[in-house]
Length: 329
Image (tube, rainbow, N blue to C red; front, top):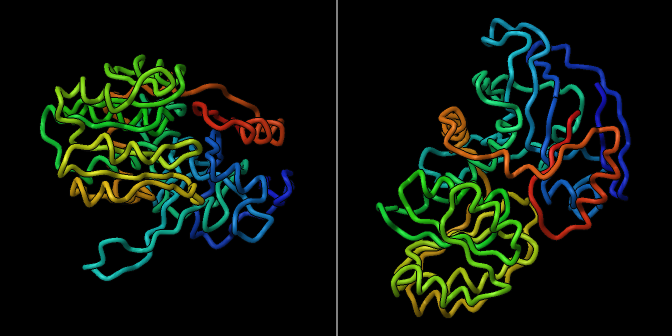
């Protein structure tokens, strides 16, 4: 197996490792991954981990051999579930969750041995380019399910990243009205292409005034902020109505520090929650994928070959924002 290990200095070491011979794991041929900001930080040596380390936690692949005892056939298209929920008391609200590619080596390899419980077969009608977004869908579901949404509720989504775009599309699915707020005209155009009617360009207009106008003076019932580079957490509280609720979500294992006036939380009596993974919504995310209700193709900026891995990671790490890039292994 060829594994691409980040050395912490902006380089990859190709490590060849023998496969598992215990019979407890299933060999998967990794075909596509999406690198996230966490993966880029690992590549740059910014992560607090032991190097060398194999990044990437969003991946799909193919089963390499028949494993009838697990209901798996050679050639099955599968999603690699990156979450390992540790054993916890039944009353524990937030059990500890380990993540491949953050807490342990990830999926940036040509072949990988996976526990059968972390392998999800997806329907033939779903494309690999769609299935690789499953973790984003699970994260979005976790964020939205923090709210008690009623039909017609306004959800202000601060950010135009692929994760925010998917969150906006799912808001429509739950019969809410998303308002996507971003400084990038390109990302806002992608949101409109994916069916979002209301978008606000912070480089040209005041988010407060625009949301006030859109909502008829009541402001957003719910707000969601992705903790990414350039995020403005102040909007999380200013755009929410009195008594509303807010969510800060991040697929990034090393999120940016956010500074905001928390007096607004008290003054407006807001409820604020954080979402750091989509472990409990992963199966629901696969169901959503199968329904074909999401437009995911517009979220793909470019596909790259693994032969140019260092160049791709270097180029992506130099950008502050953008859409999803897929690496074909």
